[in-house]
Length: 186
Image 1 (cartoon, helix red, strand yellow):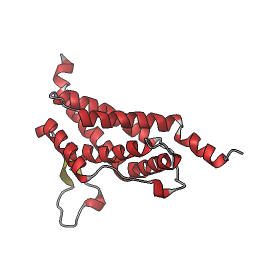
Image 2 (cartoon, one colour; image 1 turned 180 degrees about the vertical axis):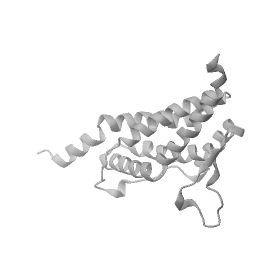
Image 3 (cartoon, rainbow, N blue to C red; image 1 turned 90 degrees about the vertical axis):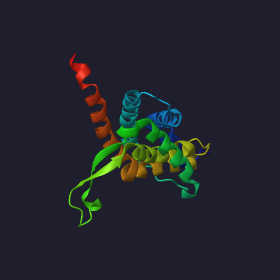
């Protein structure tokens, strides 16, 4: 006798949109971890394209409540996050900072303006951490782990990395296309 609940869950974790997200997520992690680009513009152009795909594919993840929440795990530790952050900071150098517009809930009553400094490297390291945790959990060879990977990534997209990705898309768009503006006019 076939358990239909397991069949439905198998179908969800192997849906095309989940597999496509996993593929983009894996490529994003691979690029971040192995990047040694001396050309900042090439780095910014590539990361912009990856973030666009990551955001699009992340927004399509299904709402999949896991049956066994005990199968959820986080893998990336503070030292690994710090290593990625410092790598990215060394690539971006003076291009790392950007003006960040704060949300109302982030503004304290004594704060006079709504602009603060943000860090591309910090945002990318935060996004990488959530995405890397998804990839590693999804790689496990059991449905419970895959369900938890999808659910956690869906929640973290809504609460963390989706917002940071959207913010970086805007920032990097400006940095990439302002840098090419004069060349484009020739």
